[in-house]
Length: 208
Image 1 (spheres, rainbow, N blue to C red):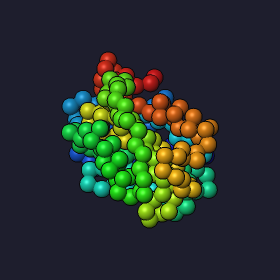
Image 2 (cartoon, rainbow, N blue to C red; image 1 turned 45 degrees about the vertical axis):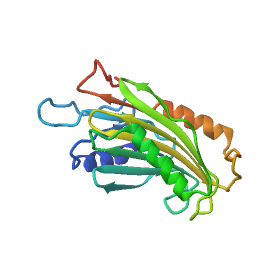
Image 3 (cartoon, rainbow, N blue to C red; image 1 turned 90 degrees about the vertical axis):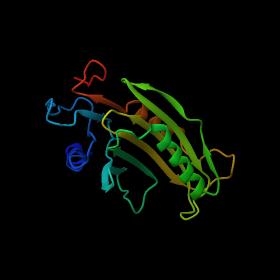
């Protein structure tokens, strides 16, 4: 069973040390009321982790906080699916630029990389960029890979959520051997990822 309170606490405590960041909470979960004028962070990253997934670790680098979750029975050493949640406390970080860095990393680390076009739009009043990237075979891991990315440019932070699969390598110009049901679940999950601001319910309303 997912431990939402543990995950929420890990992100909240670490984010408190960032110059500008946000907390993550599940849709509908009560959150502390923001207090105007005291610098309290009011943005919330809204997502519902897949049932049974467990937190596998949280790391900080610079002004970024990254949390990884894995399916039951998997961990950071042995996995074929991962959910990565990254909060970057940089008011100037650009969602499309960050996604481009993911593409460049894939090209450097894969025998062949296949990024989709970047899709840009708006979600709950915030700019959003999404894409998928395939990796035929990792140069170090020897495994094939697929990642679906959703980046949301909040006012207090940049939020990047990734669903990642790795498994058998595949040929260039071939489709990653991912079950259709998994792709459908990924799509539904990412559509539900959003950011809200409890201090600005007119432009960025949070769930009641």
